[in-house]
Length: 352
Image 1: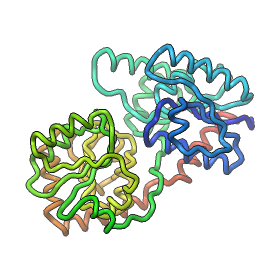
Image 2: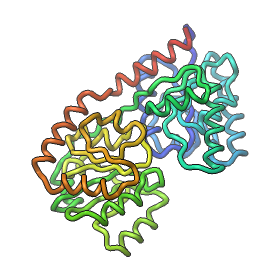
Image 3: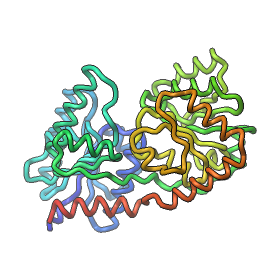
């Protein structure tokens, strides 16, 4: 079996993808693996990669010219890493890797997001995804629908990835309430971006009969959402990006997600671990994460979502029951050790 390095490839990553790769790097390095990360400078700065993990700056972005430069940079890095195995995370990183690796280089890609929407942009995205799936030796998808799409696009081997949320510290409800305020409160933690379905969240807020919604996160939709909250006087507070999510979960009555698609949603996993009732859209891999612990509603149906949220906010006994279900489900979810064992097994198969 080859003992060459594992080279993880990332594009711009602001959240769960980067944290997942940090977990894998730490685990593989503990096993004595030479781990390297090729990513844009911004991504390398954002995440706390081990100082012993070799970092290679590449310019993966939405600009095709810069992506070609990223391909050249990755090729140069691989020439300096004989016997490497390449493991890309995400479609853009997967395309850069697909164009850079030689035929004899083992190549794995983990797909973290679906191609959403329609029109030329979506068709281009599916075209890129097809190239990546056909070139990779193994495709890992964070939800079963992504695994099926990969197979349909020509993947030779496609399996479901395990992507556990990083462990949060124990939360303190008193500190959380100082932020959330009193009374029934539903908490959402999400990047303020189109995939998260936040216009639907505001539609839900407009239909609530009691309680409030607090949204943690930042992103390109902030000003648009803030204007609507102000103009319609919605019971929603946008509190920006925070590092005390554990405290907020300890104080929240319900956790919610209105996403248009999710793989293995980090915030939903965190809410389950905290024993918080969950109301979420039934999309992607969300049901695979929650089982029957959460109340799941159709995507884009604010009335059904508001009814489900109202029912929990107004019924402490129902919240207690759902909270117990959340904790029980969390105990059955895969942990970081399981994710590491899966990735190690895939890498070993390709090198045997």
